[in-house]
Image (tube, rainbow, N blue to C red; front, top):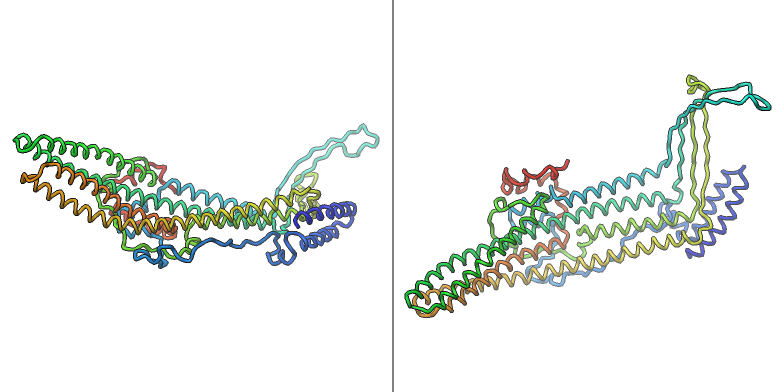
Length: 537
C-alpha cells in the first residue's frame, strides 16, 4: 500500500503543483487546495485520516508497548529459601549488615567516573530535546542592519537628478515551518523518549556499579579468610615439623615424617603469596570503582568475616523485571523513540507549509530611520512538496519500520536474558547454601581428625603419614569452605543485581550522606585525600 500510494501521490502532486505555480494570483487559495489534497491522501496512505486525528494530528503510528516473553513464576519459587514477595530493592546490600560495604557503595555512588559519564549523557539527551522543542517555533529569526552609500552615473541617457544618496535599514525577519503533519512533534517525542532511556542507562550503570562493588568486596573477604586459614595452618605446621624433627633426631621415628611435614609447610608458604596477590588485585579494583588511584585500602577495610547471607532471598515475580530493571526500561524507551521516527519519515509524503516575512525601517538618514513613515514589511506564505521521489520516501518509511521491529526483537531478547540471569542466580544461591553447610560440617570433622591423628602421633601410636594426610585434607577443606561461604554471598548479589535493584539510591540522594561514612571512612581516608579530579560541582 505504501508503494502504491507513494507513486500515486507523486503523479498527483506533479500536476497540482504546476497548476498552483501558474496561478500566482491565488496563492492562499492554492494553499487551501494543497491542504485538501494532503488530507485526501491521508485517507489512502499509511496513516488513515481517522488515525491522524486520533494521534493528535500527527502522521505515523502511536507507540504501544510490545509483548514480552516472561513466565508467571520462577522455577524455584516454591523452594524454602526463595520468597516471591515484592519488596523495595533500593538498598538490597544492607541484608549483609556490613557497615564497611555500606560505606563503600555510598562512596562509589559519589565518585565513580563511569557513573559521571552516564550522568553527562543524560544532560546531552536533554539538550538534544531542547533543540527539538525549539523547532516548534519559528526556525529562523534574525535582526539585520545595514548602511548603503550609492553613487549614480551622470553619463547615461536620462541622468538622475540625484547623483548620490545613502540608505539606512534595520529589519527583523523570521521563517516558520508549520508542523501541520506532526513531523516536528514526532521528533520531540523521539528525543523525549531518548531522554528517558538515558536516565535508565544511568540507572543501569548504577546497578552494575553497586553489584561490582559488592562482589569485589566479598571476593576481598574470601581471600582474607583464606589467607587467615593459611597463616593458622602455617603456625600449626611449624609446630608439627618441630615435633617431627625432634622425634626423628632422637631416633623414635624415621626421616619420612620430617620430610612430609616440611613439604606441607612449604606448600602452605607457597600459597600465601598467591592469596596476597589476589587481595591486592581486589583492592585495586575497589579503588577503580571508587573513582580513585590505586591505594592500599587494608587499614580502611580492616578485618571482618565473609558477609553472611540472610536465610532467604526475595525475588518477587518475573513480571516485575520489565518495570524494575533499568536496562530493560531503556531498551523499551529506545523502541518508542524509534517508533516516532516512522511518523517523521511519513511526513515527507505530504507538503510542508511555511510562513516567512520581515518588518523593519528604511530611511536615507539615520535620524529618520525609526520615523513614523520609515516602516517596511512583507509576509510570504508558501509550501514545499517533495514530488517524483522515486520511492525514496516509501523506502525510508520501511527503513524506520524495520528498525523499530529490530529494536523490539532486541528488547525481547534482553528480557529473556534477564530472566535467565535471575534463574541462574536463584539456583546458584540455593545450592551454594547447601554446599557451604556441608563443607562446614566437613571442616569440623577434618579438624577433629587432625587432633586425633596428632594426639596419636605424639603418643607414638602412629607415624606422621596419618597426620600429614589429615592436615593436608583440612587445608583443602578450609579453602573450599571460605570459597563456598563467599559463593553464597556472590550468588545473592547476582540475584539482586539481575532483579535490577540499587538504582533507587539516586532517589534518596540527600539521605545517604551519612550512611556508614562516620564509622567506615576515617578522617584521613583516601576519600578525603583523593585527587581534585574526583570532586564534581
